[in-house]
Length: 408
Image 1: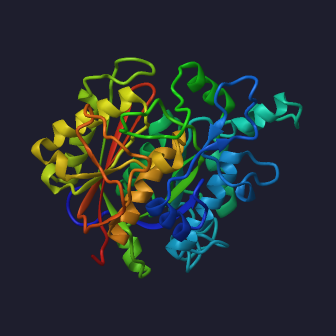
Image 2 (image 1 turned 120 degrees about the horizontal axis):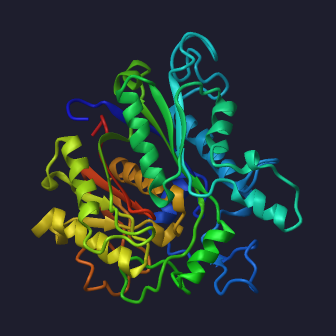
């Protein structure tokens, strides 16, 4: 992705435990330390911990749809509006790809790639609890992007990324590649997931749930806490954005991926491949470690993941590691699985636009085994480039580089 601006972020949309409005989301992210609460669909007699970071009930499920799809549709609507793109006829003259209208000559120039870990698994869970019967097709993960494409008539490339907790970042990287390859002018990309009882039970069984809150890098942390929501970014070729007079939050400058090939669930403690993903993203962006001014990290709150990630970052940045601010958005949002990496990328885009670096909540005593610099309060800064990292079960590692927008 080296050279002039190729892929830019022109719109953002969120559905989150902090709210659905972008301004409210940002204000609370920079100033609050929310606590998880018991989830209404998790039975106390089956699990030790029922608390999660949940989306408020007013923005839950649309009729006939699962929660993940409902979240993604709401976030996509907001992101398209934020980007200044038409909602009724998305390929029309004032829409995504130019004249012709849906199905016309430009009908294939807008696509969607969304990451999710469990999709609309809540539909099956509700059925097993005596609710309405659903078919496997109704709850399969591919339905998420199918519903988005149908709602907004997006007839370009369409894919679901299902790489667990790195899926949101994977989707952004894939969407950017499709634009660079000339397959699309605009891509709806990001991640969505809802609280899944099976996954939540697995974390309980693994004793990987913090009984208080998600506290990345804090000495007292005892695990992660499940979250949910959707983060959608509108990616667009820079030429297309210019042609319609759009401004942008950030440029997607580089992506990097790798696999640990180590264990189905545990990260490689050496962190070699996590570092490799970052190095590949830097190389793709044509940047050096010295060009990075901050990190929106994975930061799950589990000891092994935090230490491995911090060690990898220290190896990449060397002596600069104690001068590079790090934010872990899971401290306010919980671990939203396939949406988590997309939330980190969305926050990075906001940092570049707002020139304010949010804190890592509930950080009281930094773990001495984590050589990173999470900020304890919102701090003004003018970053040039930010690193976004995501890691997942299966040893899947993704790194993205976002750079400052055109008007900076």
